Length: 134
Image (tube, rainbow, N blue to C red; front, side):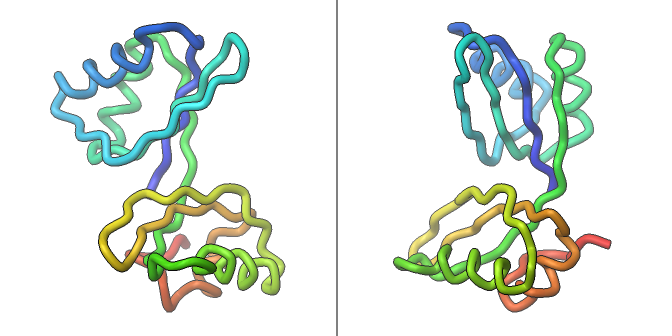
């Protein structure tokens, strides 16, 4: 899975402009997170049409950077994320980001990025969703 990070001015209407442009093109936003850092904002999102989204964002004048992520499925209970972080630490993997993408009843889908996604995928193969990176 790929995660898109969009760098944009922290101004009213930016998220609406991006979401509307993606919607018009038939792109489904599956997950998003918005952070503001003074005059700048960072929108992190996953979409169902990755390449098309990159073109749309570029055409709107936004800079987007991408990142390969791993998807894992966890029990939705206290300590589940801590156990994953500890397993990665014990294997020498530096956890760079972790986001809960979806909570569904008794489980959660989590997106994560490590300094070495292939090594992290090997450590987490029992909870990994989809193909590990090569």
